[in-house]
Length: 368
Length: 47
Image (cartoon, rainbow over all chains, first blue to last red; front, side, top):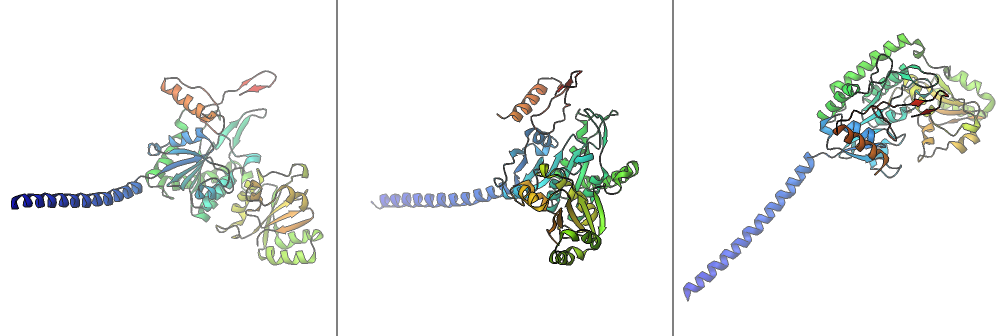
């Protein structure tokens, strides 16, 4: 009888201790599983390539074996993207945005066109936005290439683009660089894979070094751009100064020239604001009422002239000289009807950096 | 499947099968392949 009870009790105790061990083991395993998942999540970075175009994203992902796990995500309409992407596409949509755990770490533009003539500043707003947010920016483009068509000939990169990139890199402490897409002796783009050699090295190193803002190759490319700009100014001296549409005035004399369309009150206000800076750069834009609902290439070009001649800090207010956009053929009413400051449209880019807009019938201050 | 997916996959497939692609133009954006243009004597072109 006693023996039976002992056996029964020992069996009961064994079952209880087994349950206890199992429960403790389960709790222990659960705790470790959570920890393991935490470390796994921390060590496995989520790489996304945001863009408008799969062909370009595919090219970019193939630049580095370390990007092989990256997935392509199409940039949606404004308001539908993750917050960090929304911020980056605020002015314009870049070709490629590399994100790590949804944080942008690199922006790349790729084009077969040489920025010369009228389209020099066309994609400048994308570079500006990346620099403002501290994201390195690479523009992969031919520096000298043949343009085909009725007026075929070799086009040369305007050195002002490189100068603006240099200023942006300094003022935002973020590399904004151009990488050359090589051409053959006839000015035709090299398209055998060798053209990617340099950008491949730059991108691979950027990924390899943990997406650091300043990698040896990015910084070397920035220095190479400075040398290239100096070389181009010698080779093409017309790029040394500003184009004919951009002129410097003393602020007092420019305001006097506009006295006929300003009331005394308006003049006093402008003298108290724009008058704080002695010099004013005026970018004259000859759009006519019938064709004034547009941004390209002017809103990009305004950044070129702003960074080269006016800016001395990261904010649009940080200027040594005023920047005025002058529309001699437009009145205010026509302008605001066609180009409102609506943050959901690209027409808001007209209001991003200039100090004032000047029309046939008046001047409106944007910032002092 | 979108147009650019067809373009990228077709390019990959052709290369895997040993074809050399002489030219092409993606539906949007930029590609490294040369664009082949055929022009008539009247100056009309078909990219």
